[in-house]
Length: 263
Image (cartoon, rainbow, N blue to C red):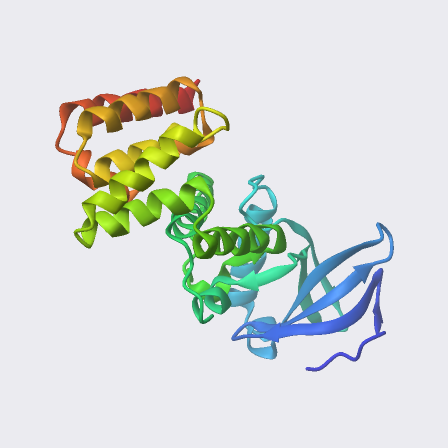
């Protein structure tokens, strides 16, 4: 089924086709009532004519519409037109995770971790509501344009080696390559910068770990926690802190982080 641009279906004006999959086709449309863009998925004949599949789809869509989570697609309406069933949802301007992974430039580690945590939080919220997604894959994970800009800026900072995050990662790379002298030089620059501009203690901790300075790393993490910096919440999942996980101080820090999230 192909719907031409300009077709009016109730309050929705079809603008263009966004894609197609096993369940049906997805179109970008204008909701003329609320003057907003929406995504409309029209179910194919297999789903529309199979009572069990259709009923399961409707029940899952109803359950999903009750969810309120920043990382879960918002369902607006379930409807039918000329015997074809559809679901109307928010339109997310952006690219799929698959498109990002297929790009030539590698995604920064920090971006990968954030996406992983956000997907996990969304799934946890769905599971608490009794909803099992059943088809998690890069094609079904959308990255909003605003987040794409953040990834782009992160890549840019890594290329220029100017931002604190980029320097911290470079210190890790230099240390692993055996160039300790250069790594220490950059670490000292990072410390010096923190005297006249805000440098998250998180990055100083990363640099200290790379140089095997655990006491300084823990001191920096404690400062980061005390400042309630957004970055401290990444400590439990950041592989850059793997060298600290056997230390009793790390377990104590994780307990603090967990307790803070519950406040």
